[in-house]
Amino acid sequence: MDLGTANTLIYKKRHGIVLNEPSVVALDKSNGSVVALGRKAKSYIGRTPENIRTVRPLRDGVIADYQAAQEMIDAFLKKVSARGIFSRPTMVIGVPSGITAVEKKAVLQACERGGAGRIYMMEEPIAAAIGARLDVSSPEGKLVMDIGGGTTEIALISIFASVTKESLRVAGDEMDQAIMRHLESKHGLIIGENKAEYIKLEIGSALPQPESKSIEVSGKDRVDNTPKTAVITDEEIRKALEEPLKAIESLLMKMMTSLPPDFLSDIEQTGLTLAGGGALLRDLDTRLARLSGLRVKLDDDPLTTVVRGAGLVLENIKKYHEVFIN
Image 1 (tube, rainbow, N blue to C red):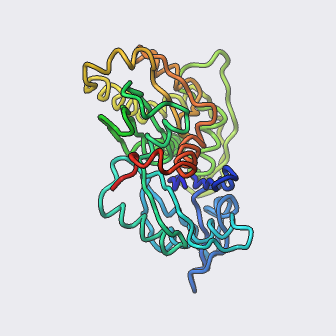
Image 2 (tube, rainbow, N blue to C red):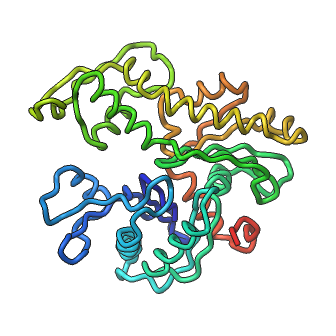
């Protein structure tokens, strides 16, 4: 399982990826029962009546709402079982490399109460490296950056472990928040998270594009709360994204300066592998390549890289036992 801030993905042994849904749950306020899950629950955000609340149980890559996370995990596990019930499955979970002991305990308890049996945890950058088919058993260093919804993580991986790693709680969600702040500040237009994400996907980019683009965006006027529409350009969205992008660039350069000397020649050859939904921002790979001088490769399907890596580990736990967090 890739229990992500933005999306939860589940890989089932011998079946591959069987679930890819937004990490959102809609709950009945009166009894806490699940009203909607995943994509349907995400469509409820900002549109619910008083008796229903929509929750994103994870923030910055870790559990923020324990009860909602438990309900969500339980419902997702039942959804991917043919009989509607998993019989205490063995589970491999990708977690942020900077996870604290308290956060780790919350993940374990939520998964146990959600129906999991034996649980193994592994750092998401290592799962991403395995999912990208990099040889993590080799002493040759591999540099991987995973840009998710809540966290950006970068790790130098050698012999099944992170030699050095850095993490930042700035990623795809912060990009959406930056767009929301910009529209409210410049246009007096208030929009929700879903619309901000839509704008990012439609016209967001890390570098100027050959042709300028614009879209019409509707929301609420900041002053009088009436409906309001504004035309938004790709140039202004690119400027709005500068702060989170510069934070990600700083993380990369911090890692580059801390690389052990013996690994520098490895990284010159192997480059930097990008994974995670946040890495899909147009030309982000090119921007990071220009900054670092490295060859930067975006994984073929960065949204699923981590869960595919966890799935490969699940298929051969004996081979990969060294990657697990104690």
